Image: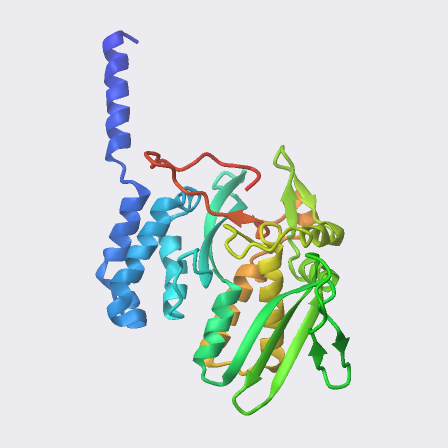
Length: 320
């Protein structure tokens, strides 16, 4: 091939790449489509434009989310819009989180792709409960060593008025009182929460430096509870933010069993349950044997901000 021919091919390839629309432009076009905007307006009325702008900002500042298909991002964003929950990570009410999934391509080969998933934060659960007007108060938090003083197994009353001995977190609680006076408290130890995570997150795996899946034990989860609780953490999921997931677990467990659930809350429970557990499909054996058509690692995720001047998506990271 002559120099002129090489130059011509290069120019043609560059023109083809230049002519291919960017994903952010595709996202904007989808959001501006009358049928899509109408759905956001039906959910948010005059606040639709502000919410759509937050979706664009989220997508434009998260290089991992940019690896997801815009159509899927819009679909997950609509779930948050219907619940009137902001997707601003700093607020912690709801998230659109990109997860690395393993699936077959058209040739039957296993590839890793990023797909977005709507997830409620524990603050989102509290917000939805308070909106019903049926809760006089609701609270959830970590419990430090020494704070738990008494548990009445007969009445279910739990006293946390003990003196804190250290910064060691030993458990998590949720308490609510309804307007009619009914109240309930749930306390779970770190070990109980770890067992819950292990039981219900069947695809609970981590990845070594070579990208190979490793089983996550209950002991490994318990060790995560030794980390400081950081409400402003950028990570989600059991491996990324154990404390936040634990608080979310006690809230959801208590409300689903004893709380008042509006239709809105029931729908939120269903959507979030799908994100946290049902999509966490294959167990470790199926993951390793590649017998499943789709495997999702739902255990650790964090947003990766786009650095100044870097609009291109980041390269795939096996440890994500």
